[in-house]
Every structure is written in C-alpha cells, then in structure tokens.
Length: 372
Ligand SMILES: *Cc1c(COP(=O)(O)O)cnc(C)c1O
Image (cartoon, rainbow, N blue to C red; front, side, top):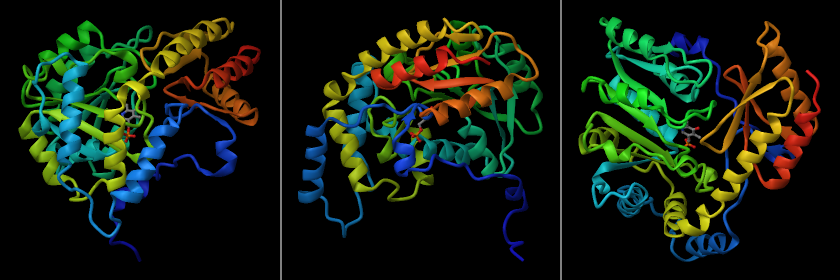
C-alpha cells in the first residue's frame, strides 16, 4: 500500500518548524534569526487599512508581481549605489527565498542533470530541498578558524564530478550559522567559476552586513543573488523572498513558480515595507550594537569560543573540542529552553539570534554562569 509514493522520501524526515502558540511566544525566540521587532504600529495600521479597503478577497492576487519587482529593483540599485543596472526583469519573487531555492534546483539539477555544491556548516535548506527533489549534494568543509570555504576541496569537487556535474553552488554571504562574510579568496574563486555553473549568493543577512556582490552581477551572468524580507525587514510571517539575476535565469524561475505564489496581503506588506524602509531598517543599528555586546559578553565565558559576526546572530563553539562536545551543547540548549531562551544547536556550535536588548541581557545572564 502507498507504494505510489517515491521510496527515497521514506528516508527523509519532515522539517519541524517551531510550534506557535502561547508556550512558544512566552519564550525569548532566538533560534530563527528573525527580527525581535514587530512592524511599527503605524505601518500595521496602514496594512490593516489596505486589507479593509483595497484587497478583494474573492480575486486572485497580482500574479505578475510587477509593482513589487520595480520597488525591489530600485531598492537593490540604491543599496549598492548602482545607477539603474537592475530592473524588474532582473527580479523574481518567491514565497520566501525557500521557494526560490527550490525553483533554482528544479531549473538546473532535476532529472539527474547535476548536483549541488555547499560548504558545511551552512544553511540547511539547500540540502533539505535538494533531497526532496532527488538531487545529490556534494559537501566540502571550511577553515576551522575563520570558516572560509575549503577552496582546494571545492575546486576538486567541481573537477571530479564529471558524470554528474556540479550545476549550482550555494554560498551564504554572510554565512549561517557561522556569521562570517565572504572572503576575498572566496570571491576570487567565485569569479573564476566556469560559466556553465550557477553561483547562488544568498544575501539573507545583507542589511546587517552591508556588503553585497550585486555590483558584480552584470559581469557574471551565471551569478544569482537571493534576498528576503524575513530578517531585517521584519516580515517573516509574510513569506517574501526575491532573486536578482540575469533575465534568462529569471525567466526560468518564472516558468517554474506557481502562478499565484504570493498572497495579495504579502505582496502589499512587502511593498509597504520597501516604501517605509528607513523607518523599518532603523532598528538595525540597535541589533549591530547589541551583537557587539553579546559577542564581548559571551567571550568572557571560560569554555566558549565566540566568533565575530556580520549578521544578526552570534556563533559559538566549545574551546576544547571533545567527543562529548555535541552532548554538552545540547544540554545547554535544553537548559536555556527550560529557563526561557530558545537558541539553535547546529553546525557543531550554538547559533544565537541577537534579540531585543532585554532578551540579550537575559541571554548573557543565562549563559555566562553556565557550567558545562
Ligand atoms: C533566513 C534565511 C533565508 C530566508 O528564508 P525565507 O524563506 O525567505 O524566509 C534564506 N537563506 C538563509 C541563509 C537564511 O538564513
């Protein structure tokens, strides 16, 4: 029975998102790199007004995304001081950048056309989504000190995978969970990647790092940048992400996406956020200041090695690696949960989102005296 279901799916576990509800919302939720700040209430009121007065619930949403794409293009140009290099036909909008990751994989690797290259530890969705499509993932490591991609291994992997060539490389800039920005050696490597491989640079945390490679997209038509409204723009609930790329790549993504992949309410929320970006992004400085405070405070812990971060989270590992390290970190994560703070144990360390100042105070207090 049920043997109509692909047998390779039996080996996969469903991604378990955090449960909502009162139990979760009473905790300091520092495990998903969301903004700790809800939308300013004046913008929520505007959005409510839009829902009341403009949105017809009986109609399909705007499936062209034209207005939002134009607003995104102008934000991208502004954020990288580009004249008008990017316009709406360089943009595709997804139901979160997760949808765009899936569309990219469908457009490039499906039907045993190719595999994906990532450097561990990194964002887990690339592998999770690839597996649901039966696409194989080649992994290389990173430098243990600064988390630079093992470029020698990466080059080898590209040369060796001849029967199933690598078609896509995913690089997060700055990386999650480790928080490091792309290095100049990594950039040189990416610039030299053959044009028959798609390079995806995921800039989900761009607004916190303020470093972007979009200025080089014109020179590298085989590059694509992913961004999202889920982090700095404080709209995780609305599920809006976008890709910036050559129109040929965008056209492929547009063929794959479902016609009405974004609800009208989410399209409006993203547009409103862009039109009020100064107000919304004004919270970033607070996050950056507190990132430094968290970094300095947690570094006082005798057993923790805390890494510099260019994003809205901090990564830490145990100073002395031992066989029980993973267990010890799990125990701390569990202990913190019991005391009211959710963090993520991943990539051989702890990933702690920078929250509100009160949340960060509690994080420091709850970690600094913990004995492993
Ligand atoms: C949070 C995050 C995203 C955003 O995903 P959405 O589907 O847009 O919410 C994408 N990439 C990375 C690396 C992230 O950390």
